Image (cartoon, rainbow, N blue to C red; front, side):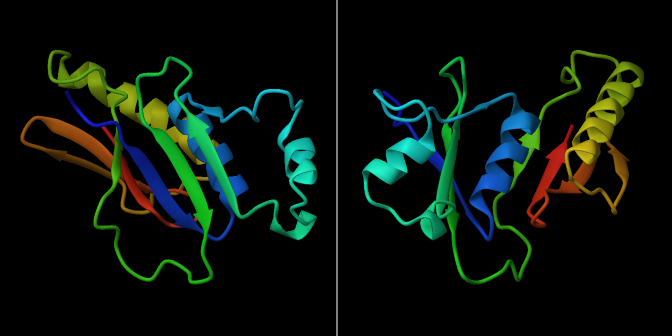
Length: 145
């Protein structure tokens, strides 16, 4: 049996990153604990000062298939290339003709740009594959393929 995992992003702004990645992946912000109508009421009930409310955030797959993604505030900024990155599979995979995959990738890139991602490296086509290397709003690398 496989072990479940959680992906963790170190970030300057957990709320912003959670909203970006929820939109990018079709995830949802993690709902507050039972009995609370929102995170503010939960945090208030726990006595957490308002200036600490953006220390963490999380998103979940509404279908329960993908891992939970957790965003934790850290004091230092991103300084190097990611050693791990996410690939967003928007093309339909190798079973779909390359001529059909490319417009799907390009449409997803356009959508992600509208959410705050950047793609200064542009598209890459190699060995029958097509992808675009992008950055999320805090500069974390990811690919759309």
